[in-house]
Image 1 (cartoon, one colour):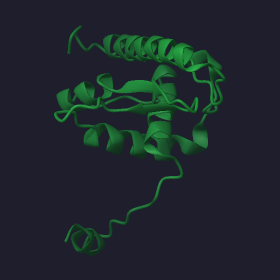
Image 2 (image 1 turned 60 degrees about the horizontal axis):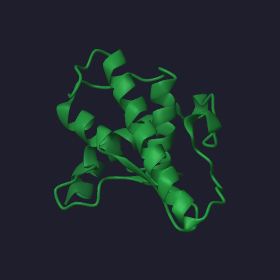
Image 3 (image 1 turned 90 degrees about the vertical axis):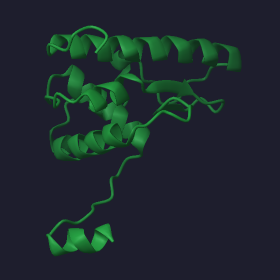
Image 4 (image 1 turned 180 degrees about the horizontal axis):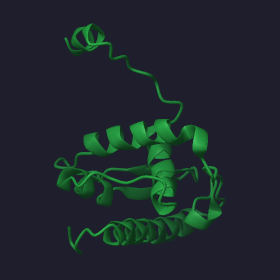
Length: 141
């Protein structure tokens, strides 16, 4: 239904070269580098600040919405994908920017991975909160 409406209006979907987690990671780099400005949307703020970083048993890090039934990330996913796509040709830092705390191949035991996940999650929320305050969004959104 929507595909027909989109094609009638000259809109086409382009598949992203990255998964959702990578789009969130790249969006954070763009936000911290002040390369993009966000819309003043309560829904977008809530979804972006509720994202969580997790270290899987394999050591791979993912960023995703909380695993509760009421959590949504559709707006955040769309915005991240669009901004990453639009800014792809002007990337200053790669996805392995260690200063953001991203390590593509951590080699830690499960217990250390859990601790790293908690620390990473706290750092991610701290950075996102600092960014939101820097653009004038009140504390607590």
